[in-house]
Length: 255
Image (cartoon, rainbow, N blue to C red; front, side, top):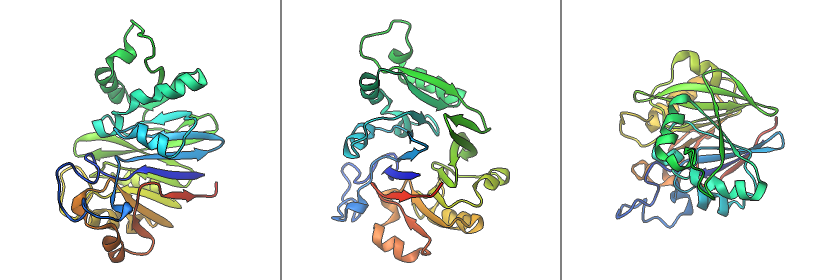
């Protein structure tokens, strides 16, 4: 399994528009963060989790030629805004894009992209096939996906486990029964927005505490804001098996 972190930033990305803080002005490319998304190559197919506003740029940068399926964690703008750009894959491969999401997210997609779901099929619009998912395992061809049902303040958000890889972003609370799905992982990619408390995201300390409880072999932190601090400085404070993620980071896991 090959995992590519397409983006590791929060909803505004880094640098933030009109901000002159040291993170937004950093010359270290690891401090530049597009909106959070991940690409997973497994079992001969390519799966993307979330299509944020930077989706087009991410696909071009990584020279992605095909996407077999898109999983949505939830419907917030920084996770769905780029869905229109899946039409490039429609045109190339002459097939609908397989979308996996909850009923609630499906409703939000209909509101956000009414032209995609209209009975009046305008030429050139994205073609999607929505597969509704619940909090139980499902398959994309030969790949089993295990949803992890968590809270983003009061909003239901899904993380996902694929083999020994767990991806969980935009989370403030993980129920005990859902933690069980995360144990024994080789790699956990986990939300850690900033140092100070936030109503709908884990802080750096929250994330480290949870990971020390779950004990993955390796963990990297994502959905990072400019309030976190400089990438290299923060990493010096963290345990060796827990580090800040960065855009374009790639990890290979044995399946």
